[in-house]
Image 1 (cartoon, one colour):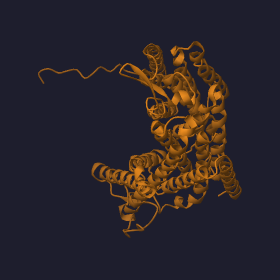
Image 2 (cartoon, chains in turn cyan, yellow):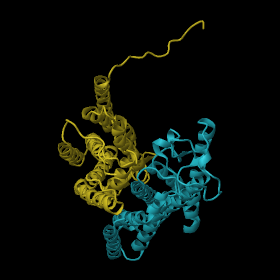
Image 3 (cartoon, each protein chain N blue to C red):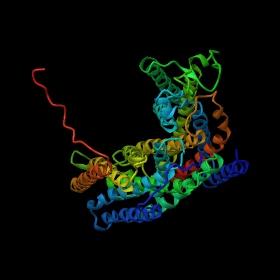
Image 4 (cartoon, each protein chain N blue to C red):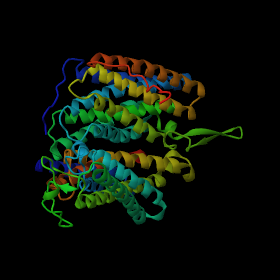
Length: 264
Length: 282
């Protein structure tokens, strides 16, 4: 960890919040705080997702056989669609719906991955990082093939995947809802058109900003993990504090630009 | 992590490509402004050429960045380029005629800070990181602006959010039929993001050749331009959209042929495989 850079990051975050308070106190600042919370949820949640990368595709490492950014985007966007569908039901219901959407997506993905591993490739699920599964207590070493780091998707990775999908989906939905309510309230005055006319613009702009912010946060977390992670029991999981700072700064910066559209 | 696995040998230096790409993209974007000056939509196709130019620059930047083992896969670089670019691009459209320049500056600011975050807070310590993320955010923003110009004929916020709809012989202004309101921006986003990350992902390895990768980028760019030109039928006059479509198809056919030639040049051996023959009586 680099303490100087962490301090610089926190200072940058405060500066951006202050700038936002200057151009749009009240609504804009509240929206930005919601966006930062959503971004942090995405960054933290991505650490739970079991990412295997290319070694997993060959059955030589545990996890889902693709990159961090792809998995996070898949889970988060599925959650975002779920949450956007429930946007009319209020903040809490919509955010949880988004989380459930993301978690469901990851649950289906993890289950189908294990189907392919077990019935298609004929390999059992075994973790290479821990001796016993932290949740079920099952021993792992007997099932692990020599020369591999483990393979398949052990139970703890499955749980981690669903947790990560839930947090990511909820974070993405939170960002979308904050921007949507801000745009619905301010765009009619900015564009000089009736509120009913402006709905498509508000929905599309909030949606594309939420997607952009989601991808930025997911890729930054991918850089933090550098490749593969097994889930919450992996030693790499302990890197999450610096990802929280990074996601907070990146979301604040991008969210501030998104708010400037209606503030200037 | 900062082990450089592959060095650039021969070919055009990256800085030349960067400057040529930046100037070419900005010039093409501003050429679409002829639409406003001449009061037509015929020059929308310059937006597509801006897309191709920016993508060529961007895919070479991805090559520079991903030559270091960043361990996250090449597609993630394309995703962060467009994720940060779309934010800068949408804000920049509020600045009217200055939009491309403002998009360049805003995207550079976002990219620079993201580069600082990755290199220092996340401890990546990759020498090319800050410059590469800055360049990629700019490429993402300018590519999206190119798509916007290609599909709507302009790049101002008002032009991107309003369209017209014909109803019972009357023309009514509508926000639904527009680049942003109709969600076309989401399609443009992924058309660009896939086109920027695919070439290096497909060509990387010991046999990497610069001209072959850049030709593949141009091919991917024109392929995206074909789709965007078809979408532009909804928002600009049919004649202008046909001009864009014809240019896109011609460019794609040329670059595809060239790419196949370059692939054959670099291959050890190749065989023109025929389709499976139909065996009668078996």
